[in-house]
Image (cartoon, rainbow, N blue to C red; front, side, top):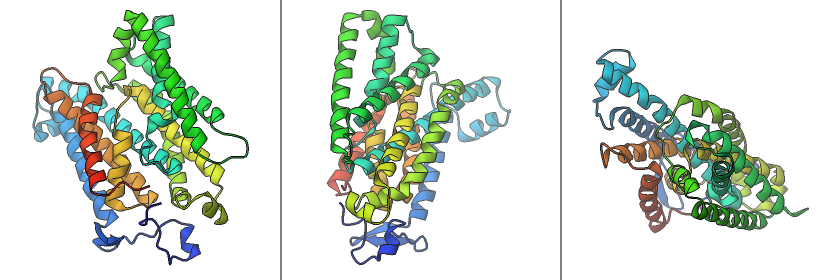
Length: 361
């Protein structure tokens, strides 16, 4: 456990609500390191998200100025520009939602497992969704497109259910069997995926466009399909976030303070699964967002999950939108898959966090 999480002299009554964060000052001190007030960080990240959203609407094969975008959103300006901005709206909204969901899922998984390398794929979400897409393509002639979500979402959820059943010995609250079960199921599913795409060229052609992750062709219909899972996952995440502060102290201490450890952990895993499964089903696997963003949030606001969650939601949305903008302009008029760009952007950020000692367990 990181020394920044709870002061040794904090009274037991204060622990029930998690670490105390004073919102008033412009900066506060943790372990001798001076940090900005979480409120200032929150406002800065909101501004960053606004800039990323504006860039997502303005930049692409046909660039537009922010004023032209605003005019087009109000129904004015050139007809062609209005059509371009209208086509980018669902892509921007879905990108922000997916980035936020992946970041929040990574935060919950890292908090539950107390593993700094925790990310949505740890519980089999990515492998389950991928295996479902491959199976549907190979045996039922599935050709991808907007219907992918109806195949990938059940596959991701089913994989996590299997992981949970195999990794939950009776009477045990340890997360180690869960992590091991996730690794085993993921390895088996990826072996199955490799076998299918190597023996079936038609499966490979369809799968390769989905597996990297892309926001191209986004629509509000896709967002509507995953909205129930996203909303339920977010509600659960907000509910369990304060309890993760106590869980960081260890199961014994959390139990002695009246925390239902098993129920809390199950709720957090369910929330992480719903968020990650919905995001993966909507746009395909996106690398590094769920792994890197929680570390960035922790470096900005400390170890209080009540602050980390909103910062992760906003940072994840901004990171994915920024990555998508780069994917569109680097090789314009073509575009890269956004999953490739997030890996290139997320890896240096994560390495920077590790080098500066911001990654804590």
